[in-house]
Length: 157
Image (cartoon, rainbow, N blue to C red; front, side):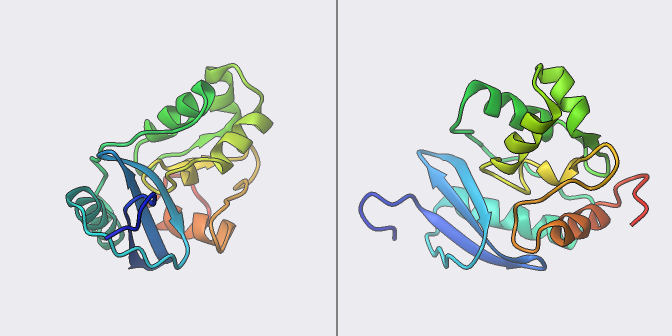
């Protein structure tokens, strides 16, 4: 199990590389690509890993997990806006920024600071004339892979 003070974490292999899920007090609070080799098997992390594996195995699988965005009110609002983008669809930084009353640049930074990527789908947020960035290892290539996997409409990639 996890050592004193550490949050339970579980790493699984995905087509886009090792992906680690992190839990605190019954909610998913973080996820990240990278080889952390989390091996904690709490009921929530086992279910989250099952849903992530199902996502990569199917174009239809979604996520239904308890999430807690540990960040500012605007970070929480940005994550809620990203989470509301249906699979297979995209929005621009500018569209979400207008809804939140922030600049498109600020929205890009909020996307980059998304603590639970993939499950909170920041990869579905694009620049007005391009893909925009992506903070996961592999960068934009990972973003393109995820969008292709989701068959995001209108993407000429």
